[in-house]
Image (cartoon, rainbow, N blue to C red; front, side, top):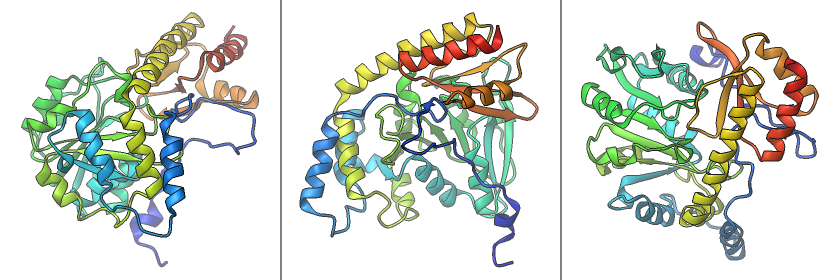
Length: 350
């Protein structure tokens, strides 16, 4: 075989289903925003197209970094690294910190891409189960041979739960390595850990514009960290990892904080109604701080429900975590989309 043994041995990450553009599905399976992105994006992209695409983009995405630092209250653009979605940021950090045979730590259950990134590096990974109340056990902050990086999704996927700011800071103080707080869904949550990057250089915070800014189709994310960390991570990224269109759109999006506040309010309100509707149908719901909910039913297996919904052209995410649970992760859609989902489920679980 021509491939590295790590590649042939791994299964690879499987994204959520993406039906064709002409398919008539209610799509509640990949945590996309159900509403159009900020209106200023169209103008920003058109300006780039008017100038032409024959030249390379800014390799550092400085226009975004400057505006994002101002919006987020960071001292300067030197505290930010731009990426082709937050998955690119996670890849850059894994490549930079974790070598072959070294250790990556993550909680369980959590984002399944993390272990794939370790496999690509020829690294080891360990999964530390959450406590029953979705806090982290003390062992999550313990030192270990070869431990080089810790991932902490906050809010977590698939549960939508969060670890407190105080616990994050304590973890960073105990750990011998960087702690990457993955805040992909944090704009729908009650708090953030972004300002903690000032307090400890080991704390890194990643974010994406895919969810709360409605830009999943464009691909843009970023990392906040102290400048000495960003300087080294810059060496690892691809030369032009963000294109001119995505840089312009991301800059316009993060500039429109009024749109973000309004969109967040709609999603959070709809999340509450969706959770209540599912609970009334007998589903067990974990209170969520993200734009999705995790649902299990005491009398109905999750996979048949997923299959019946799919046959009715409603997509949700069926997920099975060995040793913990199987269930449905349901993205928050519009009120009309959620009502259609609940009506179908009512007929399935009656």
